[in-house]
Amino acid sequence: MTDRYAVIGNPIAHSKSPLIHAAFAAQTGQDIQYDRVLAPLDGFAATVASLRENGFRGANVTVPFKLEAFNLANRLTERASDAGAVNTLLFSEQDIVGDNTDGVGLVRDILNNLGVTVAGKRVLLVGAGGAAEGVLHPLLEQQPALLVIANRTLDKALSMVKKVEEQGDFRFVSVNAYAFEDLQGQAFDIVINATSAGLSDSRLPLPEDIFAPGALAYDMMYGRDTPFMQFARAHGARVADGLGMLVEQAAEAFFLWRGVRPETAPVIRSFKVSAS
Ligand code: ATR
Image 1: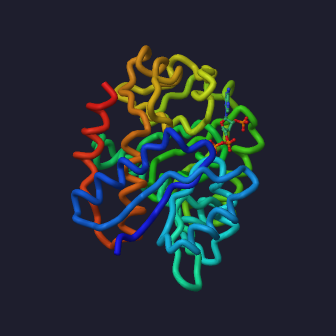
Image 2: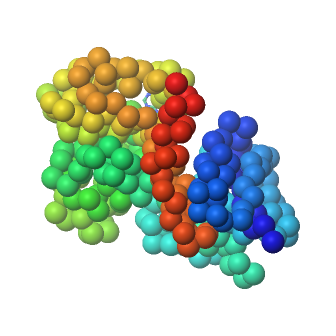
């Protein structure tokens, strides 16, 4: 019997996840069906309950339900509890297991697909919302020399740093919070945009010399050339969007569900070709 999965979000029509999982299934010979499910904004839990009643084995969760998914899961993986958000659910008779594959997806894209190491580098994480929280621990695990979180609302960046300090797991990494105006005169090897500013085509107030020579500018958003990407390109950085992260987080979810690790490079390539 074909095992069923879905991605739940609102909106959901433009999600590429069904195409990515169909490509993984074809590549690995796994017999799955993967659908898009639009949940009403006040109906996430009911949507999950109905999928379970209909025999679904798991789901991905996207905007705006990652926090609700975290609260709904009755078991959490360590990386989900570190992230404070869930993007992957695994259903069994008794349990809803919540995992988070976003951070590992970002780190694998940077390391394996872009060939950039994070260890020993100066990293700037821009944003302090859910997307930034989701990738903070996996980035710190790579042991950068320095990780700065910059956010329009400084308090949110400060509380992310405070949480890391309280946990005490990353004593060998210097982790700081800055407002945008405090970034003057600093340069970073890796600059990651985890804000949603690109959605409204807003420009981030980053200094023009923020990119160290050879820096990587990574926008976690995909499917559009954001003002951040244009700014980075104009100031000499190597630029990547979040397509590789999207495929990598999907691969990790697929592995969790199916116990088989699909190859990501051909899938990323095929999406790049179809977008150009
Ligand atoms: P997500 O889950 O995508 O992270 P979020 O939790 O609402 O969504 O966080 C959005 C992030 O984008 C925040 O860091 C937000 O900054 P504030 O904390 O100051 O709100 C940032 N952001 C959104 N629009 C922005 C803009 N135009 N300029 C700068 N930062 C912006």
